[in-house]
Length: 137
Image 1: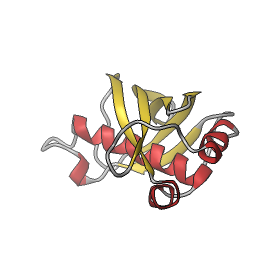
Image 2: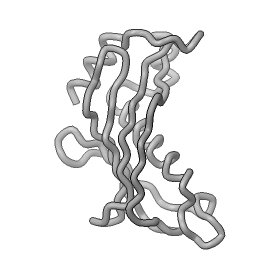
Image 3: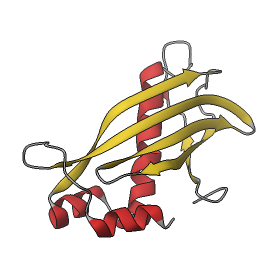
């Protein structure tokens, strides 16, 4: 699923487990929503993360995330989470992400991910075929 050029989008429904006692999405649940969209973006471009680990011996880890909350989401709402790559570097990538309800912006996030060896979590150069796939989207 995708939106504008270079933007990947993924639908999310808010479940009871995502909310606090008042039916409002708990702040940490938004991080799960963002992760799901990034995971599906990677899956659409290069395959699932286990395949990347098994084939290349690398995994992606979040090294920085900055979140700006605009408006709350609530139980049973349908949301759209976007993931737009900003830079694809030699050893990772940065993304701009949003969560929207219809046309209302609920959250903006800037995310940096690093490519690391799966065995010791040391930074490594991204496999060229993975980097190429991410750049060509």
